[in-house]
Image (cartoon, each protein chain N blue to C red):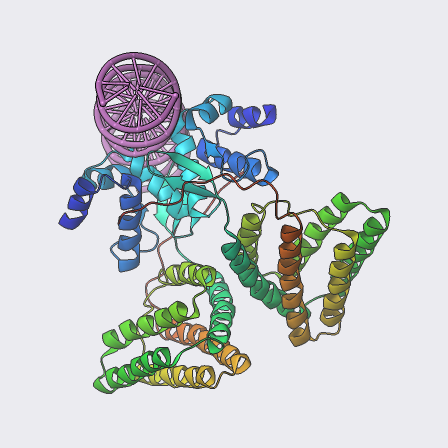
Length: 240
Length: 240
DNA sequence: TCAACGCCAACTGTTGACAGTTGGCGCGCC
DNA sequence: GGCGCGCCAACTGTCAACAGTTGGCGTTGA
């Protein structure tokens, strides 16, 4: 948090709103703010040493991008994604990821292929060590690398926006070794198709992989189904 | 414009920011604000009878959704989409539209099929009359109907966000009768595949159709290539 | 004549204050 | 004791004012 304050002090070059926006986004994605929680403007303003203006502007932006949820006269809340909508997000993510992999198959260069293979190997190692946290991180890097190499700014942007929303889902990272192994096997297949220049196959596999993520999420959800009921979130009540 | 004022007066139920946001979005999409133009906070605030706060919050949201572009200390500008990015937007739009059509093929009901066929027939009529404006409107309705019938909220949301951005492109509607005819023939093929329940084919055709839109845009762009050079827009200059 | 410097108006970034709303707490009535 | 009403604190929505920055215009000097 102190580095946040310093950021505000230092960079007068970028606007406070931008900094606050990044900070709120970070807090949400890091889990400092859990889904359904209200964001207290005054408190946050005081904590970041700014007035409520920049806070409000920042939240307005995050509302638009789907991370937050605004209710008139009650404030903004960290968005709670209903199950059916989460499912839809996975669907769209799948087709975008499929497109990206297909594109990558047509333009990948050897050193990129090496980098991806190395990530897969490292993920295997992490699974062997039972190191779920490392696997999670490597998995993100893997998908990041693919997005990078595909060099399609808009696909990347769309994909990342969707990813951020799925981060709002509960316990996204709790994966069994079995599931990790399954997932990494799919990675290997995708890369093989990309390496072979078979875009059509890469796309199909990538879509299946993303749908696998959806299935794995559903499974893990079901396992922990009779946990505490999620807190109630005020949903939009627009009369218009 | 007067109805905007009344909206502000009447509905205290929704926030001014929301109304302002809708209004700016409308102005941008309607062409009242052209790409590259700056949005004067004071002037707009005065015109809508509100203070600068709601204006700033509204613009912040639209920046996040890609319609506007903010430069520190200079203000917000109607976003100008570079050609390469426009091309990317068409790409993503294509895969999303493909997905939607594939999905629709698996769930369409007869009356929906009739509605779509009727729209295609009306478009043919419009082409026959040389009525480009009607064709444009019907074309939007057609795609809207498909999005509706597919009943996939997130795909729809993603697609519409992309559509809005392409509306920022210059002269999106100037289409020759030849292009309209070509486009509508593609519509017919897509619907035929959907009617046959052939999702795979519907998807491929839908993607080709969307890419056709990209090509038609490129063509029309090239025709009017040596028009006035687009005004310079201050682009992001984030030092961080 | 031209270039560089400095002043100035306009506008954005930010703040603090005011007004209206919401949900809860306590009091009073049944 | 339970239910309903009204008051109150907290918070959001909105506004007007202040401070800093930017780009342009005029001036001055070579």
